[in-house]
Length: 58
Image 1 (spheres, one colour):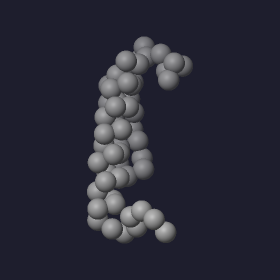
Image 2 (cartoon, one colour; image 1 turned 60 degrees about the horizontal axis):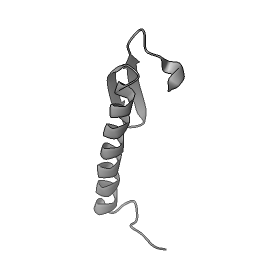
Image 3 (tube, rainbow, N blue to C red; image 1 turned 90 degrees about the vertical axis):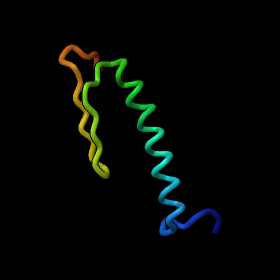
Image 4 (cartoon, one colour; image 1 turned 180 degrees about the vertical axis):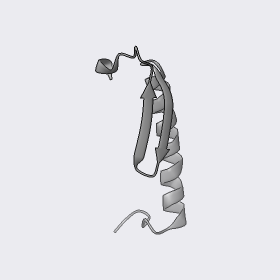
């Protein structure tokens, strides 16, 4: 097989760096639609939008 195994520290560190970068980009985009709060814990996400946010455009 090729690539880093998931158990390797370098592999999980690289995944975390990429995830943080992508999540920051996502939140920047969501700010256009009225997001006021974004929190993530493992695989759970809490997103709170302004009352007048146009969530249909998401």
